[in-house]
Image 1 (cartoon, one colour):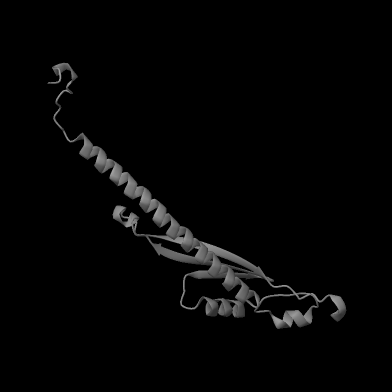
Image 2: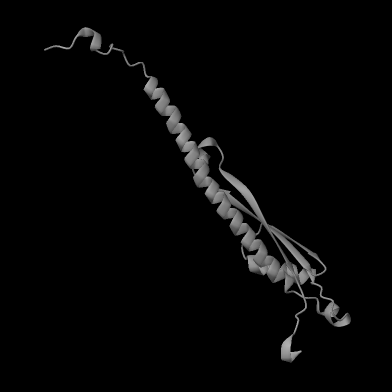
Length: 147
């Protein structure tokens, strides 16, 4: 028994529409994967820069200017030169940073250049991200029986 002719699907020749759709969707998926992967790398680099900056600010805020501490009771100031040296020592070979000292507050900014992997196919090779940290030197407070 044969199938009646009206039930047969009309014969169409493939013109390559599927190939074009496949190429466009594949390109879009690669770009989305690149954004996700390289975006995660950038977020990690920003977290690393912020952590380095905060640690350097803490190291710098421990460089107390002793003459201010002894000359004015209750006043705490940071020695800018010693704070810069302490931050530089803490950051080691990382050389893209800045430090600002104002009174008892140390503010550091660290820049990290993150190479990108998948987005480098589009010509975006790397991005520079920054993180900042602030630390304040305070005089210790003694409480309890030892006061």
